[in-house]
Each structure stands twice: as structure tokens, then as C-alpha cells.
Amino acid sequence: MGAASCTLHKKVMKVFFYMFLKKSAFFAHQEKCMKTLQCDVVVAGGGPAGTFAAVKAAENGADVILLDKGYVGKSGCGTFGAGSFKAYLKEEDSFDLWYGKAVEEGFFINDQDWLKKHFDTIGDRVKELESWGVVFEKNEDGTYNRIEGQGSSDKRPIKTLMFHGPQFMEVMRKVCKQKGVHIVDRVMVDALLHEKGNPKVIRGVVGFHGVTGEMYVVKARAVVLTTGAQAYKSHYADLHMETGDAHIMGLEAGAALANYEFNCHQLTHGNFATHGMNVSQGLGAKFVNALGEDFTAKYDPEYASHGNLWRISASMALEVHFGRGPLYFDYSSYTPKDWELFERTLPLMYRSYEQAGYVDKNRKVIQGKLSWVSALIGNVGFGGGLYIDIDGRTTLEGLYAAGDASYGPTSGVEGFCAYAMPAASTTGAAVGEASAKYARTVGEVEVDDEEIAEVVKKLSEPLNHPQGVDPVHVVIAVQEALFPYDVYILRTEEKMLAALRRIQEIKKYDVPRLRALDAHGLRFALEARNMVLSAEVMLTAALYRKESRGSHLRLDYPEIDNENWLKWILVEQKDGELSLRTKDIPIERYPLRPEHKRELHASIAAARKLGEKI
Ligand SMILES: Cc1cc2nc3c(=O)[nH]c(=O)nc-3n(C[C@H](O)[C@H](O)[C@H](O)COP(=O)(O)OP(=O)(O)OC[C@H]3O[C@@H](n4cnc5c(N)ncnc54)[C@H](O)[C@@H]3O)c2cc1C
Image 1 (spheres, protein in one colour):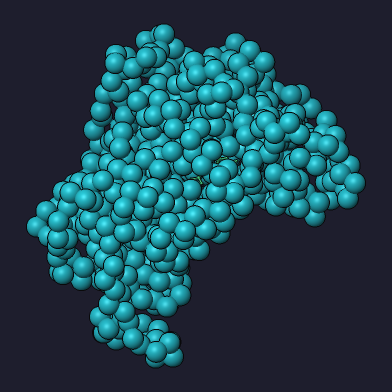
Image 2 (cartoon, helix red, strand yellow):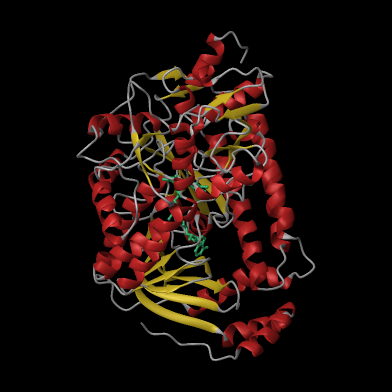
């Protein structure tokens, strides 16, 4: 690993920071203080997907550098992993039931080859995780303690393993180190480098240190993007690190995105962010409306309060639409034993409940019925991202993606139940192996110095506008455009077009003037930029798909149209503009196919059956 290290003393760097305000001084600083590293495989993003990719690439003989915007093991969604690890275990589960449900909830948009690969390998990942020290809840006899979370019904029971996100990620950091992965914390990667003279091949990344401001150029034979989802800094995602960075740097470098019209909907406390819905629902909490009715069964008789995210989100939006809000989540059936399990698997959430006075020190429920809402959280866990093939290759050579940075090939429309951490583990492991093998076929790495200079200039641009637009303004403006329920769940062309116009206005007028005063501020500015660009992709793709399908529920196209829309929508950037095309899903080759050519979306059908005018 060749590293030309920066020799500037820290104090001098501080001085340079204050000089950032002056363009010329800033670029002088960049030149003097640029770190150039080289390796076989560079991984950007150290969540479950990135750490698995790094470990597997190292096990396959690659020299690996892992860069993370935060601190590997303490940042990203993985650390918030809320108790449920929905892994198919061949010793205990029915393959046909799990596979069938995954395709059904994926609304046939899954890549069924990937799904098979996921089920074939997830058991090995669980064993591996346990051997490394990740703790899954066990019964006294040593078997897994599994509960029925989201997407489970008496007719088709699906049981989830229980784990603790922070503990999982601490173990993954330790394993990376043991395998010789070189971890660099606090570097935000935000651009890709092409092979010299070859715009279809990727050979490196550029980022900067979020504290010191040093620019990092990493030249590599293969690049793996695992920077997670685009969560639109939702108040309800519990974290603000995931801003679709991989999606946008991939798009701008020439790679295709897919499934961007599909989103994850968090179900959460009305006043503060909560997580752990699988465990909460699994232990028997219920959704009720303003009239005190458990309304979920009306829209979804099989799953009722056990429904998965989009099903309940749609039911909640419809109840509010028909005037029966506000809505609540009712924990009053919980016993002290339920709370004990809840506390063990969801310690952060339990603490917030204790602080809010909902449960006392003896685990007795004081207030059982809590205000509850559905909220857009982008593509956390499933939904859009970089299109990948069965080995995790994107549409550009040398560029791989996994986890939430990818388009979620195993899950399709909705990560069936809590697919997210398991899918990040299997896709991460697969790309680690594939990228290391590919790297062995690549000779000397050559990138263009002019491209590096251009990229550094582009990434530093907000430092040239100290009087410019505050990133917070842009973040709030994007949220105002995307978060109304008639834009993200009960969609119409009119509302989505209005939101898209607003996003394009922000892109045109605010993004070029985003301001940053230091390296920390630069991160916020680039995150805000990535949010705007992701929002544009999301709305453009949602307008393009003229049907309803799972979480993509259009009141103006309420039917699922398998005749015309059993396709992936691929989004690319050509000459600075978004360009959309479809790719047929090879459904004839897959084991499972939809029964009907067209059918009314189940939530709309249920509402109409109840006599509602919609
Ligand atoms: C509150 C909450 C609860 C959840 N509960 C569950 C659950 O119970 N079960 C489940 O299966 N899933 C759950 N999920 C979803 C799951 O955590 C994610 O889908 C999963 O962690 C995705 O893994 P990943 O490695 O792709 O991304 P992440 O875990 O998000 O990791 C991405 C990493 O990339 C880093 N990064 C981001 N941008 C950059 C950049 N530009 N440069 C460098 N590094 C970058 C981040 O710091 C982070 O470390 C939950 C998510 C949330 C938010």
C-alpha cells in the first residue's frame, strides 16, 4: 500500500482552515495536503455491507482500504439495527414459504436469482457472525429465540432472529482489523475516478477528512460502494449520515440507478424518532385510530397489525385521508416479560420510553397508547440504489455496490420484513469476494491527474461561498417537498410534479451557492446537494412508473399493471440530464410469476370495499 503522507503540522492546518475562505489559499492547501493511497480494493462505507465486503475481499487475498464518513462500528444504519435479523435458516424454515413471501412482498420486482443466492448464503453469514462474537437471542436449550415480526401471519409464520445493532457493528470493526483491512475513519467519499482515457471503467475514489479537511485520493483496481441509503435526513430515521452519496457519485460517474421510485416508510412515534417496529409488532402492540379501532385488519386481513411497513403506512395514510386520525400505537397488552425482552434488544428505544414516562422502573406500562405516524425515510433497508448484477457489479467496470447503496435486488418493492441487515451481509460478502477476484485481473492502475484536479475543485466548491445558502435551508426545503403523504404514499401526478418543480428550483438556484466554512460544513453542504439530486431521481422515476405497486401507490393509476410494468426503471445521467429507460424483468425464467395481468392495488381495493370514495 503506497501512501504519500501529508506533513503539515496540525496548527498550520488550522490556519489553513481559516484561509479556506480565500479560494486561492484553499487550493494551495489542497495541493500540499492531499493524501494519495493505493490498494487492490477500496471500500467506501463501513456498515454491515462494507465491513462484510472488506473482510471477504481481504480473505480473498486483496489489499483493502475501508473509508467511512464516521467511525466504522459506530456510524450508519447498522448501528441502529433495531433488534430484528430476518434470516432464513434452512434447518428451521420452509424455503418455499420464505421465497414465496419475499417475491410476493417484492411485488415480482426482485431479482429472483439474487434472492436465491441470498437464501443460499444467509445461514453461513449467521454462523460466521456468531463465530466472530455477534450475539443472537437464544432459548435456554441453545436454539434461537425467534419472534414473529412484520410480515408474519398465523397462516404463513415468518420468524425473525433478534440481535443488538451496536454490538453487531463493534464486532465487525474488530474482524476487519483482524483480517488486515486498513480502516480510515471520518473520510467522506464523494466522487469516483475513471481509468485514464476510459469513462466506462472506475479505478478510484476521492474524499476528504471531515475534521482536518485533507483530501484523500485512493487509486484501486476495484471500488466497492457501501455508503448506505438516502434517508433524506428524516426526523424519523434516527440518523443523518445516509444521504445517498453512493447513488449520486455513481450516477455522476456514469452508472445506472434502479428502483428509485420505491421507498421505505418508517412507522414511528409522532414526537420523536423510534425504531424496532419488528420487535414491537412481534410482541403484540396494535395500531389504533382516533375512534379506538384497530384499523389495520380492515385493509389487510391476513397481517393486520403484523403487516410490513408499506402495508401499514398505506393503511395509516388512508385512515388520515378519511378523517380518522390522529393514530396511535397501543402497547397496553405488554407484560413485564415483554418489556424485558424489548429493553434487551432495543435499549435506546426503551430508554426513551422510560424518559418519556411511558413505562416505569418495574417495567409496568404507564401510558400504553402512543401517538404514531408514518414517515418517508428514503431507501433505508430497501428501495432504490445502484443497479447491480449477480456478482454486485454495477453498469461500470471496476465498480461494485452492496447493501443500501445497491438497488436492493433481493427485496424488490419492499424489503420483505427486515431484510436490510441480512441482505447487507450477503450482498456485502458477495461483492467482497467478486471484487477481490476481479482486482487480480487488473494490472497497473492509471488515473488522470486532470480528473483528480477537477473532482477536488468540484468537492471544494461550497468553500468558495461563505456567504451562500445554508445547507440546513436546503435540507428543510427538500423535506418540505417530499414528506407530505400525498407525495410519498398516496401519490398523484399533480402533487409529484409540483414537488419535482420545487426540487429543480432548489437544484438550479440553491445548490450552486451552497456554503461551507470548514471541512465539517463541507460535509453538510455535499450531503444537502446529494439529497436534492436523489430527490429529483426519486420523483422522476415515480412519475415515470404509471401504475401502483406496493409502496408506490398512485391514486391516478391504482392498478398493479403486470402487463406493462414488470420492469426495472433504470436512471442514468447523460449530458447532465437524467435519462430513464426500462429493463424487462426476466420473469419467464424465474420460478415465481404473478397470477394476474392487472389487479387493483390491495389497499385501494380494501378501502373501496369498505365504501370509501377513492
Ligand atoms: C433506526 C433504524 C432501525 C433499523 N432496524 C433494522 C432491523 O431491526 N433489522 C434490519 O435488518 N435492518 C434494520 N435497519 C436497516 C439496516 O440498518 C440497514 O438497511 C443496513 O444497516 C444497511 O447496511 P449498509 O451497510 O448498506 O448501510 P449502513 O449500515 O447505513 O452503513 C453505511 C456506512 O457508510 C458510511 N457512509 C455514508 N456515507 C459515506 C460517504 N460518503 N463516505 C464514506 N462513508 C460513508 C456511514 O457512516 C456508515 O458507516 C434499521 C435502520 C434504521 C435507520
